[in-house]
Image 1: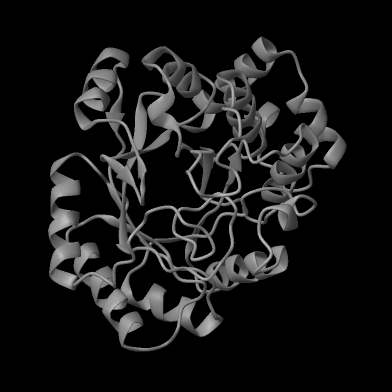
Image 2: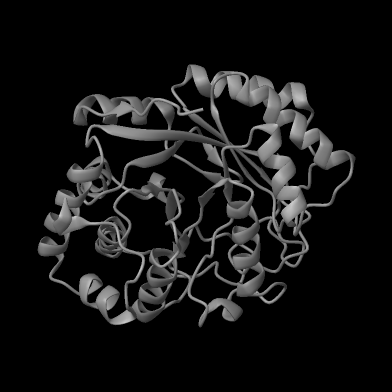
Length: 321
């Protein structure tokens, strides 16, 4: 265990040295860390539901829900509590142990919609599921209200490095994102925060992002590794796909840097073959989204996931709600 101890004092140079190792050596080390801290046959299964779609004032260059781009997404108002509860019941029946709710807001406003979200959290938590939300920027008071309602975790992705960030988003700063994560952590919420590969970033940007995450104290409990799903109408619609080797390198480095963290193979998974997904699990991924959609982008068919789990001998991690 000492060989793979949890650290929060990684230097940028140490992260770069890990990331740039020969790939097979990196994967083997990550697999050893994974087996030390986790049951390798267990995968956290999460379901993500868009509870309020489109009309977002942010200009994130990858996002179908931004009002700045013409992507064909029709805005929908906040769902009713009963609709969300039914979706959560179905998610549980399909094997999900965490239910995630996403609203296309720049920031949370303390109003009737926020009260409705708090009621959604109370009722979904009563089903015995972990509950995660991604609602935009938070104040400390709003984070506390979410915690009191029973929220398990708050998702707020850093997306990329601080250096590259303003090439992707100009309507909020990197520090805004860090402030929201700090508010969520101070309220006692678990953190879910990661990045997106394929935005035009360099390896140095990926190393910088990993360094930022690995020096959080404590580490985020969940780090999603997303790959860009190019959306027609957005500035990044013509970006080339990320290779499996880039994905695996990112997952394996994250696993070594943050041994206890759940590393989530997230957006873009539907483009990976069963063999490629298996390689990601070997490299240290132990969380996925299930269901046919991730907010507005496609996901793996449920029947394909069941077949993959059976083939690899994987089982859903029990909820810790």
